[in-house]
Image (tube, rainbow, N blue to C red):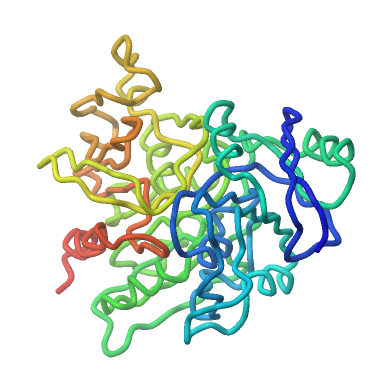
Length: 383
């Protein structure tokens, strides 16, 4: 058992026991995730690139790990923090412990941490850089200070596919989707191929004319990490595709669609990370519980060219504009987060495009939003 610590950029220190890779110092933006299960899917989600993940549920690792739960070919978070880490696995599916899994993938883990105090601190002060490892506190704090902020970081080039590839459904395909990979999770591909769609996954910097050359029935904009504002090439691509082909975006794909339409984005204080975020559909008031992982949000008031109503707090919460006229036709808000009122979905019907801020594939999380993939089928008019 090796003593270690997590030190935040503001100097706050959290002692613990090192697990996983114990011979390194890991730095990244420290965030907390409120999901109760799915730690392996979280660790392999490319949207966590450059971040140290803290799990708020007290006990992690009890069902072990299984290669089928991986959402990509490697772990992307730089560190993983827990209150308690299971020493044995109870599931028949398990192929090994989570601590061994972290070690094999070079992820620095820290357990026996007061994650309640850490979570409350991040809620009060906001997500911030941190460093975790065995070094002295002063060295860890220096590493935390040297770690970059998430603002202004385009991380899509780090996580996107290096070359295009194709995934085929079982049986005859009823459509062809080009998925622009900003850090795409495997279960998103599975959700599309499971609906008998042929999926062509292309790198994040693919140009609009190259996407259209594949003759897609529709275009999917994937999840991904980092700040959406500096992802200029993708914004230009999506702008060039609007009105030419049906589009569906999630997570970072939602933010890039918003930017392409002319909106701006802003950083949330501590982001939305977890499998239990309530979202209201604005057309009928129905509430769904969603899986989320993002630190930025679209400011729809910027697209409207006005300020949010006085007293509404963050840009875009509480009250959202009913509709906005743009160069691409009318844009309407479709979903709203019930925790902080921020925008969770938009639609541009004239351009045949819509997006949501959350993860409808739910890996991990509830499957309340799985019907959005069927909405995409309807938009593409495939049968």
